[in-house]
Every structure is written in structure tokens, then in C-alpha cells.
Image (cartoon, rainbow, N blue to C red; front, side, top):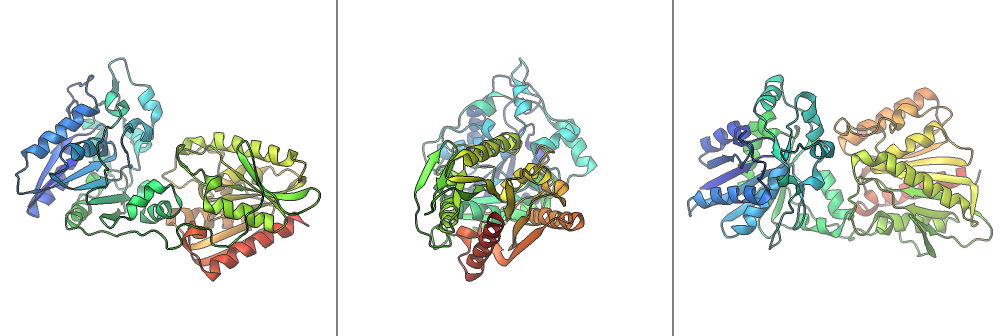
Amino acid sequence: MTAFVLVSGPFTGGWVWQEVVGRLRAAGCEAYGVTLAGMDGGGGQEVDLEAHIGDVVRVVDRVGAGEEVVLVGHDYGIHPVLGAADRRSGRVARVVYLDAGMPGDGDTALAAVPDAAAVEGAGADGLVPAPRGDGWRRWGSTAGLGEADLERLDRLAVPQPVRTLTQPLRLTGNPFDRPTTGVLCTANGSGIGMVELLVATGPTRYRVLADPRVGFFELDTGHWPMLSAPGPLADVLLRAAKDEGRRLSVPEHGGEFLLDVAERPRERRGRIDLHLPEADGPRPAVLFVHGGPVPSDQRPTPRDTPTFLGYGRYAAAWGVVGATVDHRLHDLTDYPQAAEDVAGAVELLRADPRVDGDRIALWFFSGGGLLSARWLAEPPSWLRCVALTYPVLAPPPEWRVVDPRFRPAEVVGASSPPVVLTRVGLEHAAFAATVEEFVTAAGKAGAELDVVDVPLARHGFETLDHTDETREAVERAMRSVGARLNA
């Protein structure tokens, strides 16, 4: 028999699992919705993460010796779940990450809190006030929740002891040294396709997600599926216990750039790298702007990844200075900071004597596409072209905390510089919708738009999809940018 131990995110307790527990028990399983210390409305100012880990351990210890224990951690709940799994490694058969991050030894839950201002506003009593009404949206998508669900959250939620969010998680082993399942709530902004991209192009720590013991499911709902979709969630948990779920793999090419380009002299100047062509005199330049958000501790940083090393070298092969920038888009609230980093990189680039400062192109990727808004709205005379590759061009609904200045689809117009847009056919639905919004707006405004369609390519195709189609798309986009730089 399987015993599910269910641990919820901040401000909630075992009550939030009521419907899911009923369905799991009806399927013949044991199920326990855990109310952690201090989460019963009784205060708990001194409660910390270790206390919550102890709570989960005690539940595990009550489960019969012949039962397989599946620990389910939602949001913050993954921290005490991983701590308990570490302390009772011989008893835990599987860990389920339910719309949760990937904390490791030494990580705090605070690092992943979407509403840091709420935590900073914790009172002298050491408690973070529970959100109310629309405030729940700052902690995750409320898609799928009805008025009764939101009223229930408001009525039953309690303050979160701040020390549970600030005390580091301590682990003695690898969290992925056991069967693991990730359940992604797509309305909250993440799906299996995004995880595949991280495995293929992100930091090497994500490669563990391609372990055959790791499976994935998606739920088409918001961040509280135990309330918005208890039936589908229970079904997914039962399937996870049977070791079902989609498996991922590392691309055979190992994340290499899709074109074989020769290395060129590279010079590092602050946040930018210059890939220099074989040429006499000042040359036009293109600044490649990565997407994000990218964790501040990601290594290698974007400019040292195969994608941006590849683009920088490829530009240099075309006789153009290929510049790459590491900007500080680490969180959805960081767009203003990242925009200043890009502007500073442009100044450094234009001031370099090997660069023709009157012939510059800016090339944006993925979530970095929102940073193009400033340049599309008020283009300087030296900006010959803006290129966009699988971009985000308006904040998706779940990105509601993004500064309203970063909406390219709302500012593109006839006075914008020429735009070269590389559009992938296998795009994430939320991102594809923003691209279509931009294309429609550009058409109505009479903007100059060159669209490079890649029907069978995915977001991040440079390291995911090595095909003739994708190689031709990169060549065509570079040719289009080069023509405008040399016009």
C-alpha cells in the first residue's frame, strides 16, 4: 500500500488537502494532509524550518513499515519534505515536487519567495502576514480558483513564521538519489517544455532532471491545484506512485551550438564580451541580449554558454563585431535593472574604436525580448535593426509583476527600427500568444517586419534542434541583420 504525506506551501495547513486526501483514500491509499507547527493559527513565532522537518519526520514514522511512503511538497513545502526524506531516506520511496523549486543543501525558501516585500514586512512577532484577496496572485497563479476557493484561502490562511523561510535547508545526501516526480502547473508559467530547455541549455545542475528515475506531469491549472483541480491532482499522484510520468533526456549533441563556427579573438570588458572579426577599421556590431530570468549563481553565465559563444563567433565570421552581455535579469522584477545593464553595454560597445558606433543592431532572445521595448519606442539614429529570436513580447498573464514599461507589443510602430523576428512553431503557448500580439500590432502600425518562421523548432533550438531548417533560420536571420547594418 502507498501512503501519501502531503505538505502544502506557505500560510496553509492540512485543510488545503481535504479533497485530495479523500480521493487518494477512496483509491485504497493512505493519505495525510500535514499541518505544520504554527500553521494552525496558534502563533508559532519561534518555529523554524527544522521544526517543520521534524513534523514531517514524525508523520513518516507513524506510517506502517510495509507501506511505501510518497512525500509530496508543494511550494515551500518541498523544503521540509526534502529535509524529512534526507533524515528518513530508507523509508521514503518517492518525493513529488508539486509546483515547487529545486532547493539544495544550504538554500533558504526565501530565495524563491515571489513576494519578497511581504517577507520584509514581517512584524516584530516574527510572522509574515497571510495574503488576502488579490494578494494571493503575488504568490502564484490563482487560475482555476473560484470565489469560494479564494474565500476559503482568506478565511483559513494563517501567518507564516519567518524563520521557516530564512533558515537554510540542511541535507546530507543528494535529493535526487531516489525516485522523483515533478508536477508542473502550467497556468503558473512553467511546463515540461521549459524544463527540457533547462536540461538542454541551463546549468549542469539541471541535468539530474534527465535521470530515468525522474518523471514529469503537467496540470492545466494555477498554483493551488489541491483546490482548483483536486481530482486531476489525485490522479497524477496515483500515477506518480506507479512510476509513471514523462522522462527527459539530454540532447545527443550535448548542448553545443548548431553551427560549426571557428573561434575568434574574444575580449572581455565588464559585462560584455567582444568577438572580433578579421577586418581593418571600425566595423558594425550586433549586441546579443540573453533571456531570463537567469539565477544569479548560474554557471556558466549566459555569455559563456554554447548559444551565445556561437552567436558571437558567427557574427564575427560575417565581418561584424559580435558582442554578448551578462545582464542582471535574475527575477521578473529585475527588468529595470537589466535594461540599464543593456544600455550600459551599448555605450561600451559604441565607444570601442573597433566599432562603427553609427551601425549597431540589438538582438534579443526569449524573456529578454521585453527589453526591446525601449529601443522600439524611441530608437536612436545609430540603431539599424532589432532582432528577436523566440522572444517574449508582452508579459504573459502569470508575469504580472513585470514593470509595465516592458511591453514591446504595445510600443512597436512605424517609427521603430526594422525588426527581424525568428518565430518557432513549437513555442510555449503563453509565449506564442505574445508573438502573435506583436505581429498583429506591427502590421497595423506599418512597422518594417521580416519574419523568419521555423515550423519544427523549439524555444532554444540552437542547442535543442540541430536540423537543416534551424541552421538555415540562423543564417537567414543573420543575413537580414547584416543587410541592415551595411545599408
